Image 1 (spheres, helix red, strand yellow):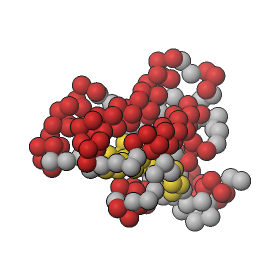
Image 2 (cartoon, rainbow, N blue to C red; image 1 turned 90 degrees about the horizontal axis):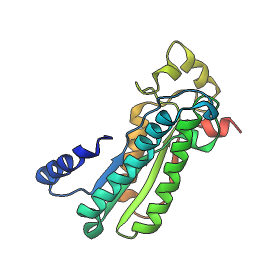
Image 3 (cartoon, rainbow, N blue to C red; image 1 turned 90 degrees about the vertical axis):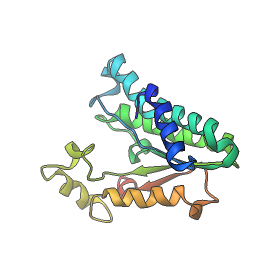
Image 4 (cartoon, one colour; image 1 turned 120 degrees about the vertical axis):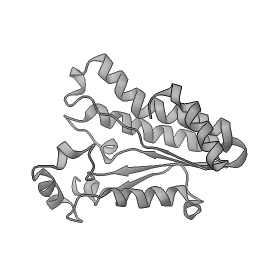
Length: 188
């Protein structure tokens, strides 16, 4: 959710329904540009950074001030395996996801011990957001070079997010967890 004017309504509704905000999952993302970083126009650059970096910061600040500063909790930021390399087509998106990992690390250093902040870094997952990367047989070719020989499914990422949000990860903070079927190691 990138519309900050809706934030208070959502937070009020959450507090009314549940009485707490113990977990925040920052999963909003956009990628309005495909091409070299050197050629992007400023409006698309700003939109990508606003959605992929500023929005997670603002939501984290809001839940910190509303609940987590006093009661604790967990924040999980959804980054990307793309944060760990370069890409001539997805460079701007990948830049924002690398910056999100650094934001994760910085916030973890600042808000502990009350709050744990971690990131999950998916590889190519069969989602509508990534459809252009895997449809029309392209996904099969990509899966073939992965050590696990398949693309990710949303459930693969959800299980890791659940782990990072739960007490099972109570001694983890400031980490970026790759869930990529071995994509990063297959590129090295």
